[in-house]
Length: 272
Image (cartoon, rainbow, N blue to C red; front, side):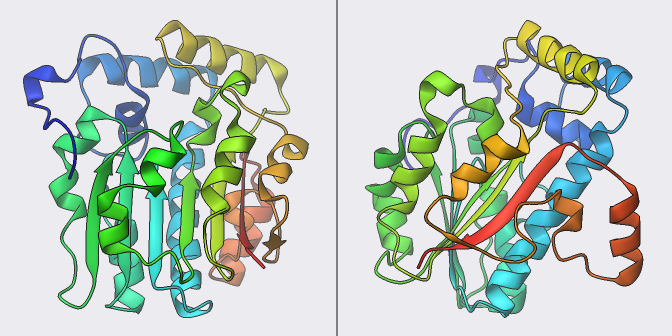
């Protein structure tokens, strides 16, 4: 682990934080009153936020399981990890293949404070945590933690789950993804989910304003704007879809997914 170890009293609890709000929506316990208040304001104008959050988390589980079981991936780089919520990505991957290796990266002090929960690897595998920022991809790709855990000459699954909608256009999110994928070996995969603009413009505007009034930049994008994150890669069926519609685990889940619209899109794609 690199950088400063944050103490609990160094974590700002005077204003809401997106990771702690996400934890609240998932039913976790790592949040404060200010996060609860902000999250409940969001939920009041967007009642689907909890199903949205759960669907995204479930997509991460299914995509990781598919990559380990069907694609044979044994190395994972998860950027924008968030507050640990079991099962974490390494638990899913190592549940399929105990030798799987995982590097987590996040720039949030509260994630760093709880990072030990991300480091409980199987004896056969390995996990590492890197305190780093998605907007500085070279710092991630050149880090000692990454290179001591993953072999970039072999395929890696890069996970960017529900993080790019916090990156503004002027921060060049498409270029960030390209720079992260570029050095990965052929046969690597990109796993990505991204908040979308709701079909109800008033909902999208209200949610965006609530986050931004709390100092959190959020930017939903359309399906047409999300698909280009996968440019140059081979999309795995069923392509870029709402996450609960990506390889549902049963016919019942498939039927339920078709009946529910959640404004987030996700996909998995292979680097040729």
